[in-house]
Length: 246
Length: 390
Image 1 (cartoon, rainbow over the protein chains, first blue to last red):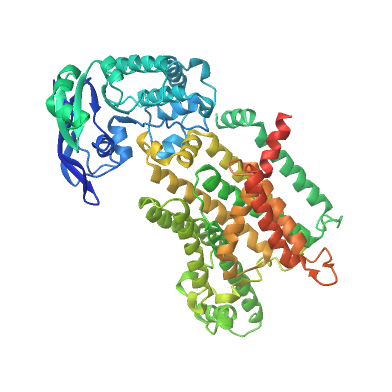
Image 2: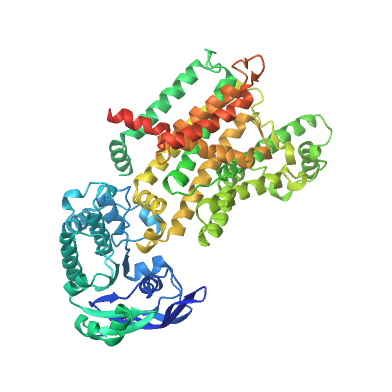
C-alpha cells in the first residue's frame, strides 16, 4: 500500500525547546492509527505542522500520489487538499444551526464570490441530512449548535469533518470529557470513518485505544519511541520506562 | 427569473419589507410636510438633518457588516466616508467655480483660452491656501462621471491595500483597531496640510450649491438629496441583507466566532475579510458622497479618529449583528446628539454650577455606551427581539 502522508525528519523548536526532533512518520490510505505519548511529547505540534499552523525548521511533509510538499502551504490550502482536523475542545460555530455548520463544511467551491452566490441545492440538502443521520443529530438539525451537549458537539464536529470529504483525518482527543456511552459511539464512528479515510487519533485514554484496535505510535520528546500493535507497544521496555518512570 | 429570486428572498425575510416600508412612509411624510412641497412644517434645515442622518445610518450598516458580522472592529470607516465626500466635493467645487468664472468673463471681448480658464478657476479655489495651480489629484475634477467613479475607487483601493497588508500579516483584534485608527489619523493629518491639494484645513465648501442650478431653491435641492439618501439606504440595506443571508454570511459570522476553525475548513479567511472590508468601505464612501453635499462643507476634522469611534458606538448601542439595529442606533444617537448640542434645550442652572448640555452630552453618550455594553449587549435592536417574542 502506498503512503498517503509522509513526514520526513521534521524538527521544530520554540525558544530553544525542541518540540519535535527529527520525527519521521508515514500513514497509508485508509489506515487507522493511534498516537499516544506523555504530555509535551509533541503530539499537538505534530498536528499543527501537518495542518500548516506551524512551520517546521527542518524536514518535509509530503502528501498524496503527486508528492506535494505541505510545509509552505496555508491552513486553508492544506484543508482543501484533503486533510481535516478535529480539535480537542469541540469547536463548532455555536451561533449557527447544525444544518448551517454542516452546509459550510460541505466540499464545495470556497472562493468568496462562489460562496456569495451559492445556492443550497437539493443534492446538498440531502447530503446534510445524511450526515446528520450518521452522527445521530438528525432530530437536532435545526437547533443552534451552542445548545447541543458536549458529546453532540464532538459528533457535529466529526460530521463537519466528514462533510469536507477529506482523505486524512487528524483527530485530537475525541473521547475527552465523554461519558462511557458516548465514548463507545465515538469508537464506532471512528472505525466506520477509517473504512474509507485515513484516520490519525491522538489520545491519552488507553481503554479507548484498545477499543480502536489499531496500529499505535508512541511519541516521546518529539520523536517516535515505538510503533506496533498496542500489545507490542506496552511491552516495549522504552515505553515502560517513559510511562512508568525509571 | 431575477425577479422571482428577489420575490422569494423578500418573502423569506419579511423584516426587509418592514424596513423598506417604514423608510418609504418616512420619506413620503417628510416630503409632504417639507417647504419644498409647500407645507413648510418640516424646515429645509431639518430636511437636511434628516437626510444626513439617513447617510449616517448607511455608514452604520457598513460598520455592522464589518464589525457585527465579520468581527473586524474597524475604527477607520469614517475615513472612507470622508474620502467619498471629498471626491464628490471636488467636482461640485470645480464645476460651480467654472460657471462663475465663465459668467464673469462673458462680457470680455475675447473668450478665455483653456489655460486662462484653468488659471482663473485655480485662483478661485486655491487662493485661500496661497496657490493657483491645480494639483495632480484634481485631474478628473471637471468630469462628473469620473469623479463619481472615484467616490468608489479611491476608498475602495485604499481599503484593499490597507486590508491586504493588515489581514495578510494576521493582525487581529485590538491591534487591528489601533491600526485603523492610525490610518484615519494619518489621512486627516495629511489633509490638514495646505499642500495636500485639498485646501488644507479649509476643506471644500459651498457643496450645497449644485452647478447650474443656482436658480433652484435649497428647499428643493434638500429634498432631492433626502430622496437620494433614502434610496441609497434602502438599496444598501437590501444588498447587506443579501450578503448576510447568503452562505458568505454564514462564513463571515463563523470567522467572527472562530477564525482558525474556518481556516481548517478550507476557507481562505484573509480573502473573506478583505472582501467585507472593501465592500463596507465602498458603502461608507457612498454614504459620505451623499452626506457632504447636504452638510455643505467637508474639512479634515471630519476624518478625525473620534468620528470612527462614534460609528462603533452607534452600532453597539443599536445592536451588533442585526442590520436594523445599526440603523436604529445611528438614527437615535445622532438625532439625540444634534438635539443636545444644537442648543435646543436650555442649560440647567444649579446655582453653584450650570449644566451645559453641549459638554454633558458626551458624558451621557459615554454612560449609555457603558450601560448598553453591560446590561443590553444586544443593544436597542435586542429590544425588538424581546418585543417579537412577547
